Length: 219
Ligand SMILES: Nc1nc(=O)[nH]c2c1ncn2[C@H]1C[C@H](O)[C@@H](COP(=O)(O)OP(=O)(O)O)O1
Image (cartoon, rainbow, N blue to C red):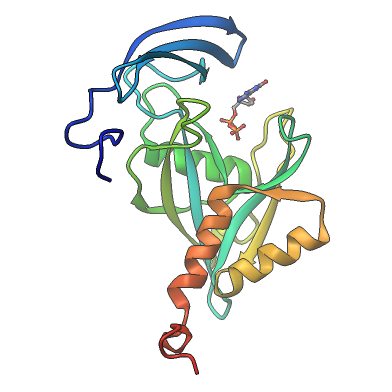
C-alpha cells in the first residue's frame, strides 16, 4: 500500500498510549484503549480482552485442524458442534480451547482434542500466533494441524472427556467434499459455521480446482 495513510514507509508510528479497564468479569474485560493513529492523531478504541491469558504467553488458546485417517475410508475433518451462548445457537467449529499455565500449544491441542472428541492424535504442523477478531479484541490462537490414526485401537471407540457444563457433538466430514458437506449441514440444521472452518473449506476447494477451471482456459 502506498500513500500517506498507509502503515508502510513514511507513516507516523502508530502506538498504544494507555489501556484503561472499564468493566471486568470472570472471563472477559472491556478496556478503553488510547492510541495514536497513522496520521499522528490520538484516538480511543473499545477493546475486549480475555482475563485468562497466561503470563508470558502470547496466545489465548489453540484451534485444531484434525484429520481422521482410516484404511479404506476417505480422510475426514473432525469438527465439533456445540451451543455457544454469545451466538444464541449451535456452532460448527474446529475443536479448540484455552491454554493452561505453562502448556505448549502442541500439548494443549492434543489435550483439547482428546477432551472434546475422544481422539488421540499426532501434531504435524503449527501456525504462528494469529489474531481472531482484531477489530474487537486482542484474542489470539495457534492453529495446530493434527493427524489421527483411526486404525489405532485407542481410536476405535473414542470417548470424550467433557466437563459437567460441556455438551459437544463430534461431526466428521469427508475432506474430499468438505465445502459441499459443510453447506449441506448448514442447509439442514440451524447452526452457524465458524469462519476458520469455512475458510479452510474454501481453501480446500480452491486447492483441488482443476486447471481447466481457470477463466482463460474455459470455453
Ligand atoms: N467468555 C466466556 N464466558 C464464560 O462464561 N465462560 C467462558 C468464557 N470463555 C471460556 N469460558 C469457560 C468455559 C469453560 O469452562 C472454560 C474453558 O473453555 P475451553 O474449553 O478451554 O475453551 P472453549 O472450548 O473455547 O470454550 O472456560
